[in-house]
Image 1 (cartoon, rainbow, N blue to C red):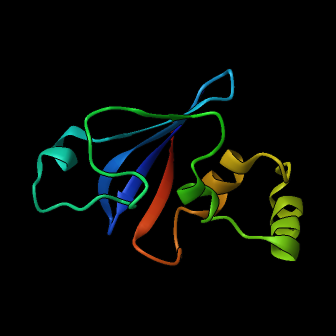
Image 2 (image 1 turned 120 degrees about the vertical axis):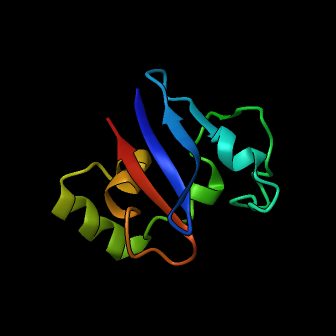
Length: 107
């Protein structure tokens, strides 16, 4: 299982998980959820206490990845399979992203 913390404007918003069977989960952090001033990280992932589940990487997170030649270059440089979307997300979305969301790998 791999797990990542999802930050919105450097504030912990939730957790993204890929289990050993390849299923993805996203859930909001309790403190973030309870803060009525905090916004959802995406229109497709509204604030809720339930855990979102998907067979594929959620499109919101997938769209944070590079495409085409840049994706190939990142894959080769980082030695991560191009099809390992979660691995590429963990390796590339921890800083200098477009927008307010960053992803940091948890041990």
